[in-house]
Image 1: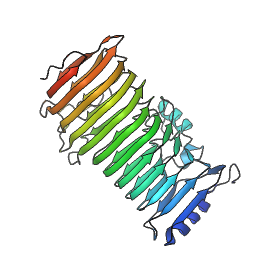
Image 2: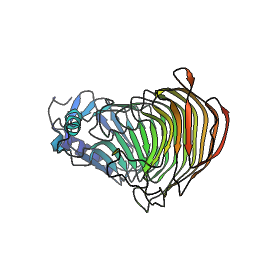
Image 3: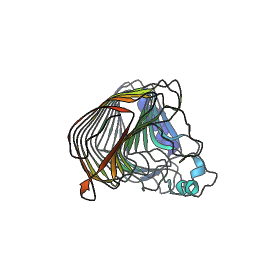
Image 4: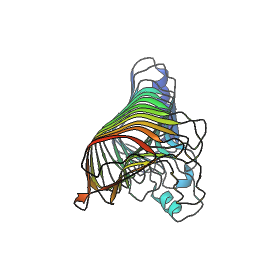
Length: 359
């Protein structure tokens, strides 16, 4: 077991190099205890496509956020194939950086706790990510990644601490996980395709989001997304699609939200094609070029903490099309919640809240 404040970065790097250079299946084992790490990259490709990183202990980032605050990522797996990360706790110690940001001071951007990049056939199982400086877990430019029994924890006030972010990646599964954080529990950026999310509990946080999209003109689309059997509690949003109001070749298509329970969610169902977190300051004012189509909502139940539970605010030049809603029952203060709909086309049935009038 490492001493409480011993820097273990070099030891981890050496262990990885041995495993990566061995053509036989390997295990990198982290025993119980606390191990302090600076930013570290586990680089591939490796000679073996069967490496297990088994963590029984806790990996701890520097408490001084300036040490790794501009590194981009704290722990990064890059160009790996067939790696399994099992167990353990990643403690990003982001509290001081959040305080700096919330005070409006000049602060580092912050690092992502765990980043899987340009990789394939990766499994993350029973891992806990705690108090990241920025994103908790990010999956980018990767294929066939499964996250299961993952726990993400940060206060609801922590800025930019998205739980799991997926971008430019395909065949991603997020299963049987619990996410409590200060931003989106799960966010899917440009190029997220064939993503399956099931049995996830979210809250606090900003819900499950596609986007934001459309900041760039040339941008890959988001398609084939399934969100099933999830529970959102006391979140600012539930099921959200958000795009900037500016020209873009991006799109969102073939999305299914199925068997979702909401408890006290502020915006349970939301398509916002005028997204701007600046609250009116320096917000783009053009129509969103992102095309939103084939969005299905089935068996959605629960309570809204605001009167309007369903809001479709779609692009004037690219109206949302093919939106279907079936068996949606959302209430506000024990009564039927309201629906607003602008520039959207579709059908609804089995609707307990007032029937959508498509415009």
